Amino acid sequence: MKVIALYNLKGGVGKTAGTVNLGYLSALAGFRTLIWDLDPQGASTFYFRIKPKVSGGRKKLMKGKGGHPLDDHIRGTDFELLDLMPADFSYRKMDSALDEIKKSERWLSRMLKSVADEYDVIFLDCPPSISTTSEAVFHTVDALLVPMIPTTLSVRTLEQLTSHLDTNGLGDLPIWPFFSIVDRRKKMHRELMAQVESQDAYFDTFIPSASAVEQMGVERSPVAVFAGGTVAAKSYLNLWGEIQARLGISPGGA
Image 1 (cartoon, helix red, strand yellow):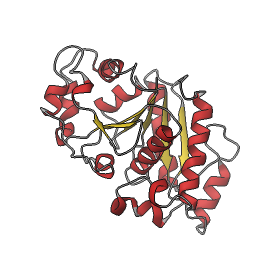
Image 2 (image 1 turned 90 degrees about the vertical axis):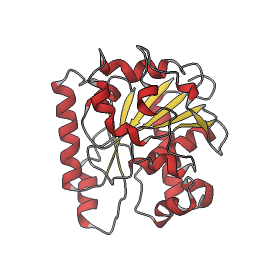
Image 3 (image 1 turned 45 degrees about the vertical axis):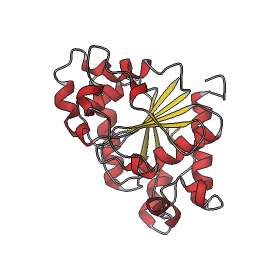
Image 4 (image 1 turned 120 degrees about the vertical axis):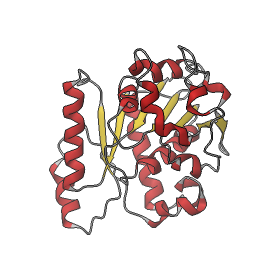
């Protein structure tokens, strides 16, 4: 089982769109895939036409030393091999609840172990912050997938994230940035992308600013489902190919 978090300190950078599209493509490729929507806003949950509600909320979910089994809350989507652990508005108080748990940074890992035999790939759609919840994410995932708009502030937040991980003994955690909502007509976008071309951490693929991605909110589906021939759909497919190669996984052998 491989666990990947879509994470950024900033909001509005294409994190949820990335989660939904990459999760769908993972399942389409034959991987048993789970998306856990950890953001109380529940955007990923909305895209899959599932009610943003966990029975009993975070309290039931976090009950006991090992946490309540996820199987009680996971929902199937309209797509084969793709399941969703929905958001719940009570997640907004997740940090305060985790502060009361011993070794809270291991809580998420313990929860996911309960479904380790059921999934090949798990995507975490994370809220945009450094918090007790994000610390649990950092101690759980195999890699942080970081969508970034090619602007100065986005580059700065990546530096802040790297510094935080180094300071807290997590400097070995792979950080895989990729550019999102890219407008090649903008000089700043072109220049910032050119500056990192030689850095191995960045993916070659970028996600363009595209109406098809914006249309996801109307269609409530991954881009490939309703606009498979678009540049955006092909870009997500290429990005998933790069991610799969880095993870070194294949269907049936993850």
